[in-house]
Length: 335
Image 1 (cartoon, rainbow, N blue to C red):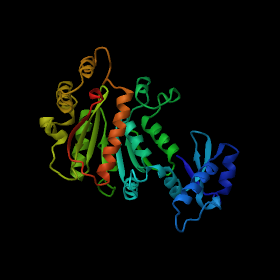
Image 2: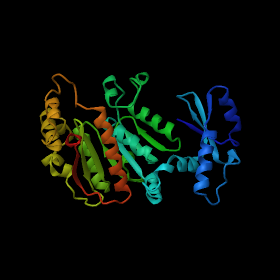
Image 3: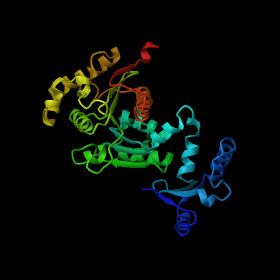
Image 4: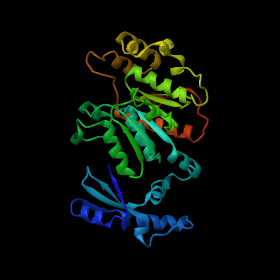
């Protein structure tokens, strides 16, 4: 975990770590940008930039062996989202920063997660049980130095290196019956404002929706289709009786996890969920799963597109835009 140290109150700890870690003083860079921001948009009652001890912190990144001096949480967020203004209103930015965004599955989900974080989401729950593999690097931003490490932990580190004041909760076992309430909410845990479901396991897909529907939490799923993406929105917050997967999966709600993991059932239900309106190349590639390729065929370009689309969809739902339940397609092939 990171440490956030006050320049005065934690002076001894800072001095101790300065002898062990690389020290990066990013305050001078941030100060220049903050002065310009204050010139254009003065902030009443703010301490200004004269005394850095008032509005800076030292952030300790043990996995980097580094300590970085940055603006405090409020100032940092104002700078980091400065170019969002008017594209995202101030009220929307506040709502987005305070929303609980839950992301299950870190393939396409990793792209969505980081697009959410980049636009200012600051309370994140992420679940994935897998480690980074070499075949993941065609679509996940990663390093060969991190092969074999937890995808969820790597995602957490990447988020905290971009905004150390983000509240990130990691579920390294993935979404399970034991951590369902902690991940989605209920019984004393704040419910998620939006769930981005990108897991591979069909039984887990169903369980996440069952729990989300019971809590009235909307679910968004983005599926890559060759160069294209499919967006599924299920607004359980608006319609608690809305059918799972828009009703495309038939009797899926009546099946237990064992039946959902039966290969025959899985193929049938997965086909019903995705539908047959997919690109010709995707049709060919899916026919090779288990024959010449081990798993779902995916491209980094489509995963990146899915990340942008999923993050925008999530933000608009959280901020109150009219985003109804249903399926939508973004077809690069049509351009």
